[in-house]
Length: 306
Image (cartoon, rainbow, N blue to C red; front, side):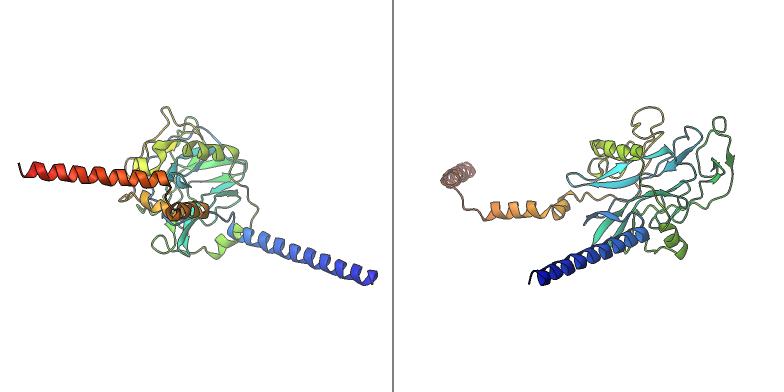
């Protein structure tokens, strides 16, 4: 009897282990296919990308990371300024993007890798025209900048070349129906399976600092942030800060719609408050308010008949 029980327990444990391995394998493969994956999902689409100029490159080895709209549950969309970042040698930045599917907008985080992968077909500008990157390239251990789209001072940076790039004026900020409706190419899918590196600590801190600045929220700047781009991460003041010259499209204040993105707990709390019976104090307050309203209406009627 004891031997039979031990066999059953062993078989159960083995089956659990096999299931765990299968789930982990599937998760790893899926994550490799989509790069970083969807981190945030909301029901409201991001504003159009603002129009702004690129600050001058601080020096050799800096790569441009374009600005984007990030989401905060309390305040909605806020702008993370484009900025220059010291890049890992030999790596390029694939920007993150918002994708619309299944009725929600999901954020696909950016990453560093040997090639630029799929970023939703979004025209972030400055070499990121929707597919690939035309702003520069690694040659050995040095990065060479394409002066046709990069703001580089040749006194400080000598690794430069010039190659014509077609620039479009599309400022749509999300991928999917109603936005940039394109899918990754076979090559971009192959790039997504390469070894990647997440955003650098300086980039993460830069985004966090933006989330603490009320002026960067779309509800405050209406799609035209005063800090559209910076010379370095977290540098929100000084001569290398660039202001947006215009919003990328018509801005609609959809703050009221944020109620759709409240957590389930918030909705349950609201429902419980709405369904709760009023206390004796609340009932008395309601009666007093009604009496006061009647008295004011009577006085108003008397004034009209004078």
